[in-house]
Length: 324
Image 1: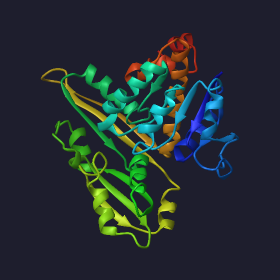
Image 2: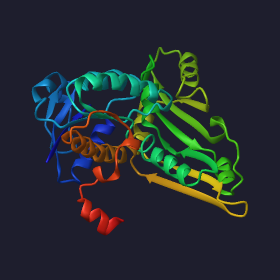
Image 3: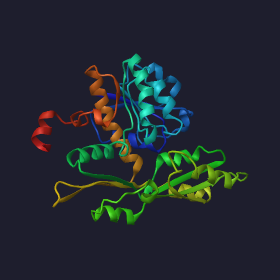
Image 4: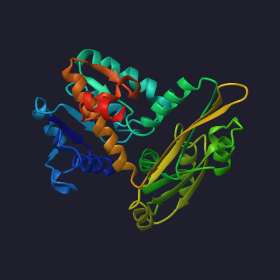
C-alpha cells in the first residue's frame, strides 16, 4: 500500500481525493492546508491537518501530491517539499518548465528524493502524444488545441491580480484552424491563430478595471500571445460558472509517409471535470513515483521518463496478456 498526502485543497485537491476513491493500492494520510484545518470540508472521508504539521509525517508518506497553482505556489513550494519528500505536481506553465526542471534538479541531487513534474493532461498526456506521434511520423507538423473549457492555471493567475475577487477563464479553439488541420493542408498557425481566451472577472468595488484588463491581456506566458476578451461580471456569476469545470482538447500530427500517402494522427479528450481528471492523472503518477523511489531512483522526472507499467496497479503479466 502506497501512502500519499494532498497538499492544498482547492478544486485540484478535491479531484485527487475523489480519484483515491477509485483505487485500492493507495492510501491518503491526509490533506495538509495553509488554511485553518477546521475550515476545510473534504468531499471524502479524509483527515485535515495544518501544513505546519507535515514534518511529523515524513516517515509515513511515500509521495506528496502538490495541488497548488503554477503561477505563484509551485515554483517555491515544490523546491521546499522536495528537500524531505518525494513529490508529484501539475506545473503547467509550458515556457517555464525547463527553468523549473533545473531548479528542482539541484534540490533533488542533494535530497536524493524523486519529483515528477508537469503531470496532467497538458503538459502530461498530450506531451506523450506529441512525442509519440512525431517519432512515428517524422515528416509532418504538430498541432495542439485546448478547449472549449476552463483553464485552472489561467483562472488562478487572474485571481492573483490585485483587486480581483474571483475569475474564470475559458480557452476556445478557433474552428477554422482545426478544420484546416483536419483537411490535411498542414497550415502554419501562430498561437493567436489557434485560440481565443475569454475571461470573466469579478473585482472589488474600488478596483481599476482598465488596469486589471491591461494586466490580464499583457500577462506573459498566459495571455499576451492570444486574442483575449475580458468581461467584468459579479462574483455570483463567476461562482455559477465555476460549478462546471469542463475542458478538453486535441493533439494532431499531420504529415506523410510517401509522396502519395498522407497520414493524420489525433488524440481527443472531452472532460466533464478538468480538476477531477487531472487529479486522476496525478494519482497514477504518484503510484509511479512511489515505485521508482522504492527502487532507489531519485531526481526530477517528466512523463517522458516514466515507463507506462509504473502507472498501472496491474501486474506486468496482466499488462502483457491483456492490454498488449
